[in-house]
Amino acid sequence: MSGGHFNYDQYKVSQIADQIDDLVFHNGSQELDSYGELRYQEYPPDIVEAFRVAANKLREAYVYAQRIDWLVCGDDGDDSFLSRIASDLKGLKPYELEKEK
Image 1 (tube, rainbow, N blue to C red):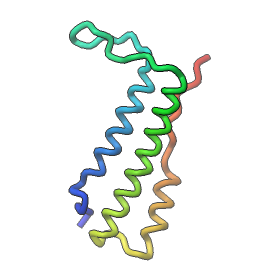
Image 2: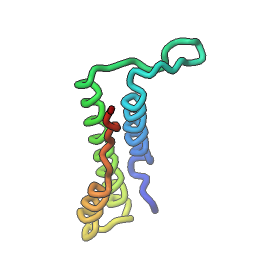
Image 3: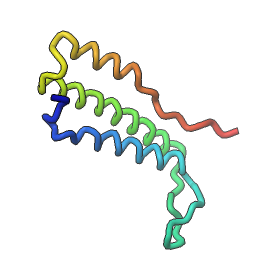
Image 4: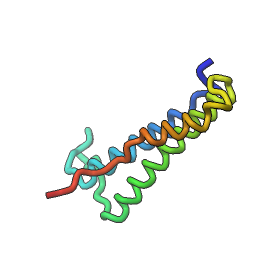
């Protein structure tokens, strides 16, 4: 079956997290877009940290949505549901910006 209860929309949550990571990674970049405008803004450190927290929480939300989807569609059983959520959450790697030297 491979899910489908949420019309496979849970991937959108993961994509948003990736887009936030991109904002963090390129914070203050001088890269220009095709119109010659700065592609990224520069946000203060407290805002960047809030972005990191948000991206990590969105990845957790994706895991929950994916596992619930698989449970209600019969791909996961009651016996494995909670253990698979725990395993998936444990496997998440929080996004961390490299420390500036």
